[in-house]
Image (cartoon, rainbow, N blue to C red; front, side, top):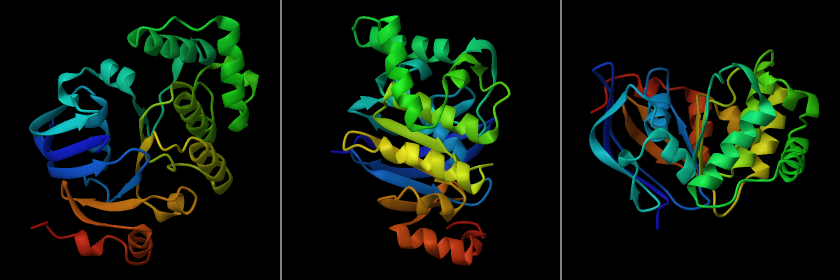
Length: 251
């Protein structure tokens, strides 16, 4: 049974139709990569799934864990197990990283009817997760993403994912702005979170990320639709030939 099922999804941004009939299913534990040229609708798809304001569904359905995702607000989707790692993580001045993580973690516990985490137990838990991403205590004491390098911001996103333990993780161009060392480190963190109970939707322009995070399926999104699907070989083909095949208007 699919963890996530998207059927004939049409979505608009500012009155303009961006998604024009997306059909996609992710099973438990599967990793799917969505590739495509600029303006194809990749990030729009991630924002629609996460429930971002201004991204309106005109038609279609999204079912997550047998629930109609479109009936849920953004915070409810997060508490149900959906996580979005942003292409450009925002800075949150005045909010310490550790405080941010604890509040998010406890919000999820409250939503599921569990007792909030003890401060010392949570500190130990976060430190163990941060260690796998080579993040120091000093980084956790700083305001969220303020003064962070591109690689540090992306590692911070993956730390959030490690702490919140989502069932569906959406990585929106996580490789954007990373040098090769930062890319390897972030990919290692993602791979450590692979689980038979966690699915991932990886959105990227380039095949290089998929050298480190091996997907089960690759999809080409262009002109608001999935134009082709295949295995890892499809990503290699796109790396070699680019998106010229999909540059014309889709049928």
